[in-house]
Image 1: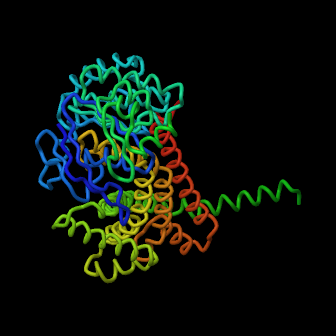
Image 2: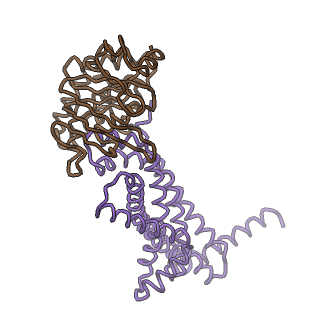
Image 3: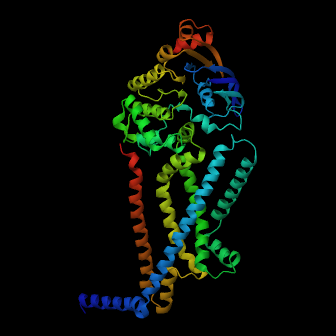
Length: 240
Length: 249
């Protein structure tokens, strides 16, 4: 579904990604862990071109999205993204937050977008918040709405950029539950997270990133049970 | 002579002054016409200023936010050129007095036109645009960049995101400062008399010149400006409260 070939990204003189090759299959749940500054968020943001790669190629469902002729807006409509800081639209109600993109981009008409949004809201248990503004919601509620907002577009893959890092501890669970449910439903997911429990439970494959490369990858059992790379061992010792 | 007599003498003086300055020869009509002219110039200049200001602000912030990532080509060249024009415009307009700009417009650029009202409106609009552009620009910069990213990540284009997500938040953020700019603009138009436009100040001054009694006409002019500004402030306050709907917790 997503193939990454020799991806490099530089900010000025700082080389954040130093050559990444990855293949993500449909339905796969890939969890990316690693110390801060290791390039994991940058890698994720390159996948939908929020960051423009310095060199290398990214193929999404057969299309080279790094090709200048590629319509990146059309690609992004099939890739949902959830941010650490939620980034809900504060001037719109929850329902308007959910329906704005599908209606504006012409993916759905107003009615079917509202119907879809209503169903998804019910699934995350927030039907009663449809008319509320983001400022009236708790952090956990905001992030669940942000997930629903991405899902309303019917994406083929969901990208999560540290979705629980800005949450109070007691709200982490409700967001992870929604993500677990999503995983169970077969969604392709790429998740940057510090939640090792989630990585172990949901991940099909865990990537340990450090210094701009994937240092080690494998099943959760391999990475958490028997890490080979000393950097991985060191990192896991600190966080577990 | 008692205090009461003094008071009544003063009052009758005041009454005579009032009649002389406003009632005789229907001089109050000059003030009304002057006010109309002032409001007309201010309104037109305000609309022109906002139009120019938004355009300049969008060009400058778009350039600032995309110049590092935009691909080389004619699009980039055009935007870079536009950005320079906008910079030149703000520099020149903010660096010279509005009266001088007005005189240049009237005596040089539109020397062949006798329509002082039109020239004044244009001059004040172009002047205001430079200030408005900076207000809007700071408003755009004040919106968290995650908002643009969220919009773009949902597949909306840059312009769709700008219009549907950024602009409403910018409007809310800049409204108080924008109102301030409009108030300043309204009062700045009082120099329109330099190019023989009979605005409110000009009218008051002309009455003073005829009656040789400065107190009444000039205080009247001041009070009229004050009243207009207070009314406008009240109006903006109402609009602001409506825009702050999403802030209620």
